[in-house]
Every structure is written in structure tokens, then in C-alpha cells.
Image 1 (tube, rainbow, N blue to C red):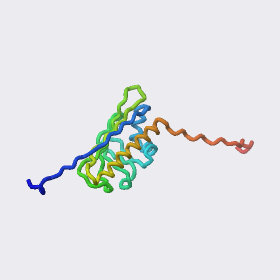
Image 2 (cartoon, rainbow, N blue to C red):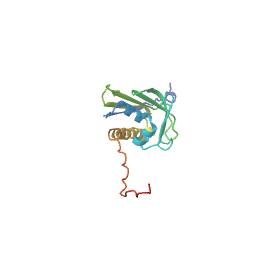
Image 3 (tube, helix red, strand yellow):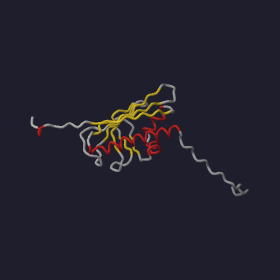
Image 4 (tube, rainbow, N blue to C red):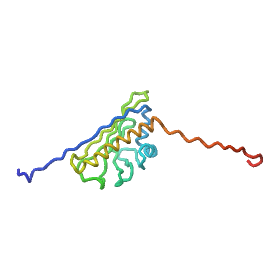
Length: 169
């Protein structure tokens, strides 16, 4: 086989993040699949059809957001996403995958959330995107932890300093 006929196979790379959350597993699970909660910890719009083959979108596609197909959904245990082609990213033949794995002991309010990302081409064209995706999830998971462990307090209703006038109520 001549050199011009050889095919160079590109490798892929991934990332792994681990966050320990001191809250019940149901709260962590809902934060991953409820668009209203996702908007709080991610700061981005979200759309989720939380079922196998459903849609998982965080942000606006083409503007830093990503859209995925839900490949595996196992309540309180696992959520695996396969990302759809994004025209703002370099082309690739590999599947970009994020796999969220939740580990917990029954009755305990402590959850280990692992995010394993894979399939990102290991070439110069993808270096910047890889860095953004990897560090983006790192920030999102830190915000998720902070949001769940320190939920915002509802604002108290203002107290009226004026007493109602008799006969006007």
C-alpha cells in the first residue's frame, strides 16, 4: 500500500468530572432533567423530553448551546446523551457522548455524580471546542452543586408600614 493510500485514523479524547452532592438523589436527578431547574444552575435555556430517544437541549444550538438525543435514561442512576451534529463545530465522524452516572446509598443524602464525556476528535481543529466543552461542564457541575446545596431563599413579601384605613377594606 502506498503512502497516498494509507488512511490515518484520528483518535478521540474525553473528559471525566466528579462532584459529590450532599442532597437526596431525587433532587440531583430532577436538576438534570427538569428544564426549569436547568435554567437556574446553567444560566441557559433548556428543552428536555426526558424519555428514551427524547431531546436534550441546553442553550441555543449554534450559539454555544448543544442538542442531544437521549440514548439511555435510567431514573436516579444514568443519563446518556449522544449529541447531534452542530454546524458551529468542526466536522467529525465520531459520536460525541456525555454519560451522567449517579451513585448513592439508599437512605443517604449524598450522591456522587460522574460525567464521562467521549468521542471528541483528537486533532488541532477540535482543540478549542474540546477545551470549551470540558471546562463548560466543569463550571456547570460546580454551579449545580452550589445551587442544590445552597438553594436560593425566596424573597420575603414586603411588609406594609401603613395600616389599612377603617372602612376602606
